[in-house]
Image 1 (cartoon, rainbow, N blue to C red):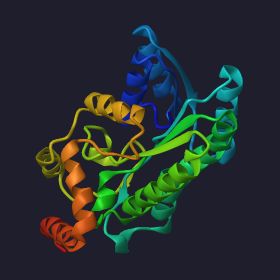
Image 2: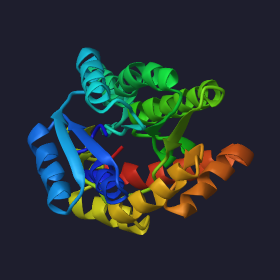
Image 3: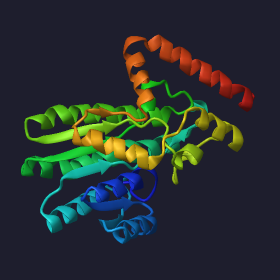
Length: 268
């Protein structure tokens, strides 16, 4: 589980352990990952922790090889690490773009490159990549986030087709609004230009009815067990996927309306 020290990753780790899995929580914030693993162990589950930066392909491969070597199998890989990167596109730097690509996309690629061949060789396994329900919107003011998360969806679909004949599964998580730190600051390592003041930002997210992360993890893992291709919770966000397919111009109009609500606050 990459990004396993907080938010969705930590909640998924807790629920996996509750269901009997041995969980390896990997995160750039190794101390927090160890604290989460200790909490799982104290509750009677099985968990390990590792300090890992998913931008480092060699380190990702080494961790997957170590886990596989010590336990003899790899049932799941959750490529969950991600950051929010956004702001007006004209203000974004190349470093902003690179950070989004390196964490949100290449971090997933590094995980797939390390785990997928081993799963193919063993004849089973399930790769679960975290994207976002915002891929069904326009992601104005968050172009790097939207672009990288859309790429994760495309990658996951390709893996699912390739793996089907080899007994290996792939799914993509497209969370709607889940109550985690990414709502406030793009995550611990996010790069967001503040579009609203803190109170207005909180009110905006509350209008979208954030789902509790533990509830999200339970519903998500039920769908993983069912081998769903695209997993979206809260359920009402599935309407965006439908509308994006049948009425993309409506999605564009909704996105323009939301952008207009932001501009007066920025004076632009």
